Image (tube, rainbow, N blue to C red; front, side):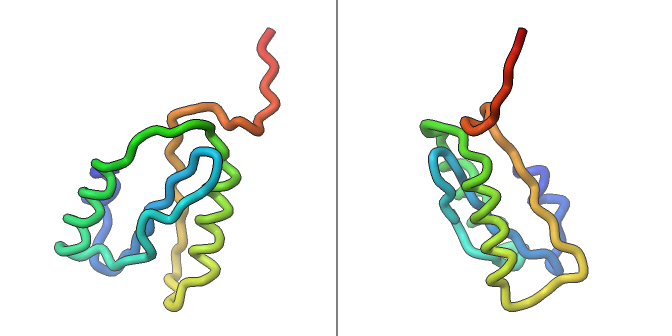
Amino acid sequence: MNFLIQTLTPSDRLSIITFNDSGYRVCPLRTVNKENIVKFSRQIHSLRAGGGTSISSGMNMAFQTIKDRRMVNTVTSIFLLSDGQDSGADLKIK
């Protein structure tokens, strides 16, 4: 995550969203400036794994964040990082 932040520029904005059994917006969209990079880093270091892995909850929160933004960039991206298998996935291993 810190690598991602270091590759962004002041023309970029970032929101951090976590998910376990539900999605939660840790911070709203913020410009990637020096002051906010410090805030992003603190928020990233405070993240802890919780129960469940509902990727759809996190993605829904990400889509809502994009939908609600006031300023539209020419490029919009979602970076998904997970530490587990989606609890809604129907994976059958033989």
